[in-house]
Image (cartoon, rainbow over all chains, first blue to last red; front, side, top):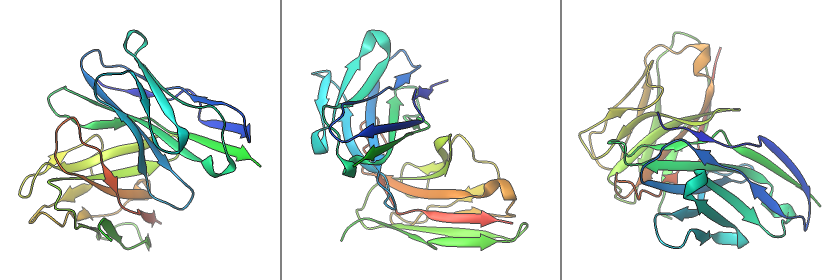
Amino acid sequence: AQSVSQHNHHVILSEAASLELGCNYSYGGTVNLFWYVQYPGQHLQLLLKYFSGDPLVKGIKGFEAEFIKSKFSFNLRKPSVQWSDTAEYFCAVNADTGGFKTIFGAGTRLFVKA
Amino acid sequence: IAGITQAPTSQILAAGRRMTLRCTQDMRHNAMYWYRQDLGLGLRLIHYSNTAGTTGKGEVPDGYSVSRANTDDFPLTLASAVPSQTSVYFCASSELSGPYNEQFFGPGTRLTVL
């Protein structure tokens, strides 16, 4: 069955530090990949997505993610985090398994110290 | 402002009681979803609807039912609530039900079953 693993459940960084959040999925076929973000007290919103083409995708607020097919990974990165990036980040995968249901990872809580 | 509304915002419920969580979207999206969010488990799909008049089971459907009488509304019913259904419930929608489905989320309903 499809699964999505996010390696870090909690990450604490200081402002201006670089961020990389890991995401691996288990499905070997064609996948569509998403990162969603949930800021404190707010609902989930799309950060970025990958369907095809350039494996390095750029999203809002300076975030980017790289799809590495050979590693089944879609890691999220940001060169320099800000206090306002404090949030929970969810990786999600939608695969052509016949149901096209989106599977979410368990989430990574990021806390950025000012 | 277009989007998804959920009601109630929060609810404390006695075990054994029946409860319906409401979800309405005004984006004319075909597909709608119900997720529950639990710490360490991320978002898990309860039920979904690819279009009005159809519904399907997600990852954790037991104890829940849904209906989709029209495009805009997708209520989730707990027939006889149990404490393990304590969670935050998110309704979401997407324009289409296929693999490129960016999902838009509502603000959530925090449910506590005692």
